[in-house]
Length: 143
Image 1: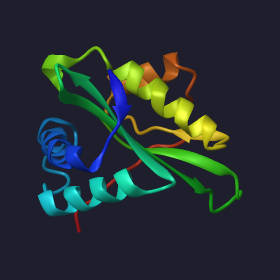
Image 2 (image 1 turned 180 degrees about the horizontal axis):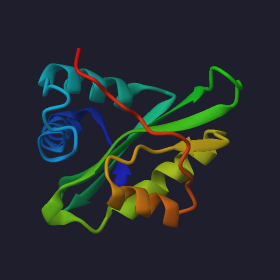
Image 3 (image 1 turned 90 degrees about the vertical axis):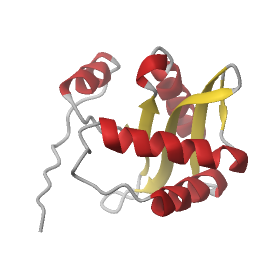
Image 4 (image 1 turned 120 degrees about the vertical axis):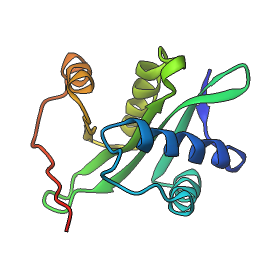
């Protein structure tokens, strides 16, 4: 089942966010800050221009996608942007449903484009197969 997250989901969303950072390409590249994750999830759950969808199995959240819409600073067009997308590895199988739900929400909000971050080649292939195109790559350096 996929549903919109509520405030009571925030501790579980933070738990999944911590695991996402530990087990993804972000490991060692960004810090794990539970307070920052809690603030992000709280803002996303209560934001009129943002949403978090969760996938549940037996009443437990096993996946999440967080999306917000904003006016693109260069074009003024309404864009949707995925901030995070994660499904617990042992529960994989609902990720595409989460992505499609986020896309439908973005369309309903009036967004004309959606941007998703591909942290690895496997995810990039999923995006390409779904009709996404590569716009640019993100590079990071420790200062």
